[in-house]
Every structure is written in structure tokens, then in C-alpha cells.
Length: 481
Image 1 (cartoon, rainbow, N blue to C red):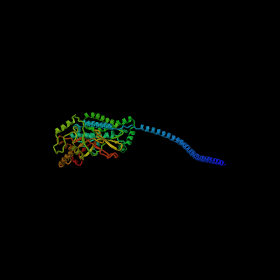
Image 2 (image 1 turned 30 degrees about the vertical axis):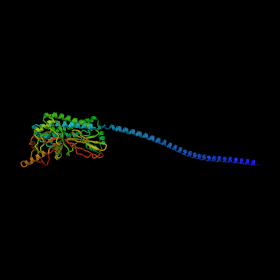
Image 3 (image 1 turned 90 degrees about the vertical axis):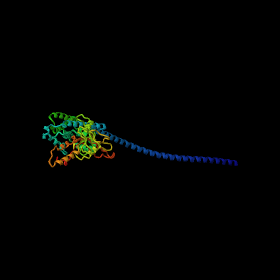
Image 4 (image 1 turned 45 degrees about the horizontal axis):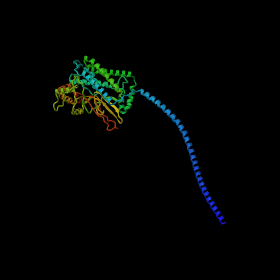
């Protein structure tokens, strides 16, 4: 019995162990089921979120396709506008000339051309007006009226024109004829455009525009240059050359003997034509080159070497000057010289010239190059010996009438007042001729100025330009001559 009970107990305990194991397995199954349910719920939530995201992306895709269509239309419209503007720009470019950029080489070549033309002009005038005038012409008051009354000679600064054949009188005639020629070349030929048959149109406006806005000035000038055909502009150039020729002939030819007139007319016509041709090339430069007859006193002077008609070299001229006699120590008279016998002055001479406050009269223009750099605009000066150093130099021809002649004229005038209240017009030249050697009152000079901006972001300060000038006596001091 006990044995059976023990067996039953063992069976019960075994059954209980089995039940416990089953219960444990069931709990694990329930836990797994809960985990699976949670995972399922999470997946369901993720699925719902993904479906919503997918719906949103589908909506965005539909919107993108709509935007793509709009953008495609805008792109096609922009492309059409670009084609229209390109065609318009091409048409506008066809209305203007392609301007030539000026580099250092082009600038130097231009300066050389201008120097050569001035040298030829000086040589021509010296050849025909640097000699004696016949007595008949010298005594004919009407022959002198046109030149003496010309605006370049008489107003606002008067160039004295004695009718004698003294060296000084001859040089005065050379200066006067140069002034007349330079005046008409500037007014008719040295213009930014040849649109009309006569000069002066838009010159001042384009000059101011070149200072304020060089690219706009270049564009406007290029458009105006293309406004007329080459044939029309060539015809206008010919008319301007004819006008300069006739104006100079009217003023200067009466002082020439009949045998010189034909040669002078041929030389003058050829010179004017070549000036016009050279300036036509300058008109097509992108940077503007313009003439100036500013009469403000330049700061620096150096004698300008010019050709000697007699073929004498500069060293020979200096030797001859020294052989003719040099001034004594303390004398206010410089070494004997002439227009065709020039040497460069000492620094002391240049210093004395800078202090001269005599009246000045324009004789020949200088040339100003207006350019724009990356950070500032500047004005460069194209002169007779080219541009020097950093390209901001100026050099131009200058005629000077020295102060020591003023002093001598004043002294003579005071001595003569008691005898004759009004002296004759040639008295000034007579006074000059009384000096030993008959020194020349006139020389050609180079003027060099510098226009430097204080920094790269500042516009270059205004600098007075040098030019061809004749320094004359003070009208108040020699009013009685």
C-alpha cells in the first residue's frame, strides 16, 4: 500500500513538474506573443507612416512635375529673350566701330607721330617765314593786317610782329605763323569726330565725358564715328583740310615773296592732309586723346631739340654759341643762341624759367591722353618726345620770351619818355638787337609734369598742362614802347 502511495506521489510530483514546465513554456509563449503583437503594431504604425510619406512624396512629385513644366516654359522664354537681346546687341554693335585699345606701344607710336608732325610743321614754317621779307612787303601795311589781326596772334594775348628783318623779328613771325597753323588744326582737324564739314562739334561735351566716364565716352564716340560712311567722312576730312589750308594761306601768304608761295602752298596742303590722316587713326583709339591750349604756367622746362635747317649738329651749335660770346659773370643775358641752335638748359635755368610770370600766348597745342585704370582714372600727357617713366609725364613745345628783355625794354622806355612819349612799334626789337650778339628771345621747350594719385582708390588730382606758348612782355611795363 505504501508502495503504491509512494508511486502515486512520484507520479503526482512528476505531473506537477510537467505542469510547471508547461506553464513556463506557456508564459514564454505568451511573452513571445506579446512581443510579436507589439512588433506587429509597430510595423503597422510604420506602414501607416510610410504610406503617408509615400502619399506626400507622390504629391510632391506631382507638384515638381507641374513646376518642371513652368520652369521649362520660363527657360524657353528666357532663351528667346536672350536670342532677342543678342540680336539687338549685334545690331547695336553694327552701329558702332570697333575701337582700338591703346597700350604702351600704341601710346609711344602715337606720341612719335605727333612729334614728327610738329617737327615738320616747325621746319616748314621756319623755312618759309624765317628769312628776310622783301622791302616791298615789309613796308606794305596791308600785307601784315591778316596775320596781326588773326585771333591766334592778337587775342587774348598779343604776339608782337615787327616788320623788320632782325633775327628776333623773324622768330616772332615763325611763332605767329605756328600759332595760326596750330589754332586752325586744333579747331578743324584735332577733333574727336569728322561728322560735319567744319569742326568743333561735341568736342567739349566728349572731353568732359571722357574725364567723368571714359567707357561711355568711347562708346558714344564709336557710335558717332560709324554714323557716316567712310566716303562721307573722307569728304568731310577733305573739306576740313581745305578750310585749314585757306585760313593759314589767308593769314600768312601775304608775307611771302611770289617765288615762295607755290612751294609753301604745296607743303602746307601736304602737312594738313597728313595731320588729318594721323588724327583719323587717333579718333579710333578707345582712350581719348585731345588737344589743349591751357595757358597756365607749367612747372618744368627743358629745351626741345629741333632740326637745324643749316644742317648744324647740336654740339656744333653749342660750340658756335660759345665762340660767339658767353655772358659775363653776373650778367642777366644768357649765352647767344637761336631757334635752330638749341641745347638743354641747366637746372638753374629751368628754375629761373619756372619763376617767370610773363604773359603767355598759346602757340601750339599739347595732347592729353585720358585713360581709366582698374581703381582710378588718370590723365596722361602725350607730348613731343613721347611718354616717360610711369606714363604720367607731360612734354610739349614751349616758346619763351625771356624776362631780361622785359627789363631791358623797361629801362630803355624810361630813358626815352622825356624825348618821345610814344615809341614806334619796332622799338622792342631794336632794344633787343642792341645786345651783343643779337641773342634770341625765343626758344622751344619741353614741359614735363606729373599727375600721381595719392592712393590707388583716389582719382588723380588735376594737373596743369604745358603747351606751346610764347612768353611776351608785360603790357603794363612796356605800354609806352
